[in-house]
Image (cartoon, rainbow, N blue to C red; front, side, top):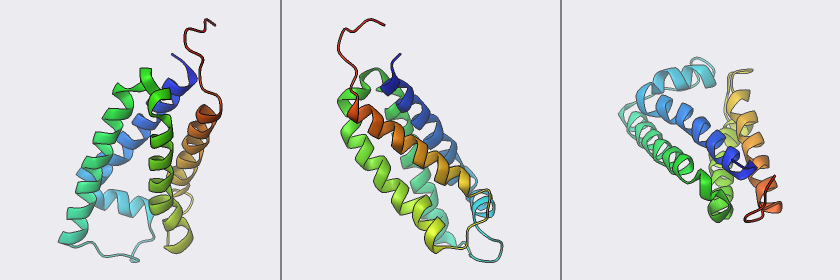
Amino acid sequence: MGTAANVFKATALFLGFFGLQFALVPDFLMSENFQSGSYTLDKWHYFVMRGCGCAFLGLAGFYWQTADQADKFMLVNTVTFTLTSIALPFNAQLNLPVSLPKHYIPVVGCTLLMLGHVYCLMNPEAKGKKK
């Protein structure tokens, strides 16, 4: 398994970890990542969070199942993962009352995975190359 496949599998595990929290335990996710009393969850938040969680789980499944073809999908997944990282953890870190140091988990995780994606884009694995 090459570097791109490893990046895809790591991303799948990361998205699966947060996807399960969004879908199954949104109260826990919020309490771990945001300051107590800074938010109120209502039925609309649960609706959107659970939908987001299901989407993350679907994306995690895609990453996992296509890891052996990662180079083929690397560009679109780099863009998608980067935009998602900007919209969620990076935006929260800059503009919302996050709970530190716990919120560094999604921020640092997304940063490392984005760097892995970009590295793979810049260094595609040669077809049929033996190591």
